[in-house]
Amino acid sequence: MNRPLIGISTYWEQKASWGVWELPAALLPAGYPLLVQSAGGLAAMLPPDGPERAAATVARLDGLVIAGGPDVDPACYGAEREERTGPPAHRRDAWELALIDAALRSGTPLLGICRGMQLMNVALGGTLVQHLEGHSEKVGAFGTHAVMPVMGTLYASIAPEATTGVPTYHHQAVDRLGRDLVVSAHSDDGTPEAIELPRPAWALGVQWHPEMGDDTRVMEALVRAAS
Image (cartoon, rainbow, N blue to C red; front, side, top):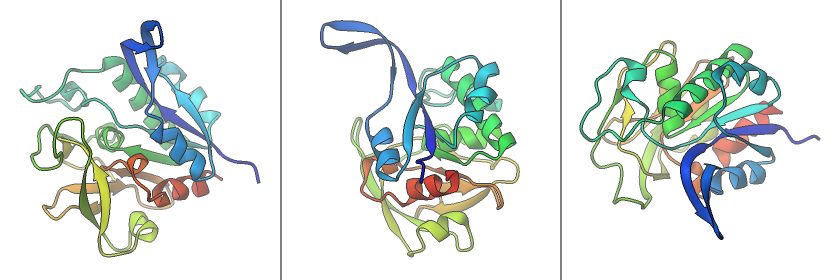
């Protein structure tokens, strides 16, 4: 069986260092392509491009991952920037919103991870909580907490146990849900931890970072859908 091609959005940094070089770079933590590969897919990096090219890009993919990264610009959901919201990544916001739109229009299986889940919500008209306590242990270090599935959802079919420990690092979260989205997992404080579109769409967002853990089931489910 041919392995499905899974595109993964990337960072775009004006200064990155490796060897003797310090240059602008498209970056992606290795956990993302490694997770795609271990789940049976082929990984392709998708650095920011013109939003008008998103549909043509998605047309060449079997599945799409919107990766984690910086805070979504509050202007994307009609809010004022709060003090603890990070600096904007305008180029990445525009590109990834266009990728999400193209995937939803074409029915291409879509997985949003952390920022990717938040951006899925924004793309469908939702809003975000700009600062949330208790979901990051310390700066630059992933923590772990439990998430609980909502029965009858896609996510619950992937991870049906009552609770699952997941790697987490975020300070923003879904506030008002975007149109047609449903919450499919939550943490013990009620924070939405997974959102999805009802079937027959395959569009799932998870607030945690599966690329930083050993549980490959979410990515395996995407790869199966993309096959």
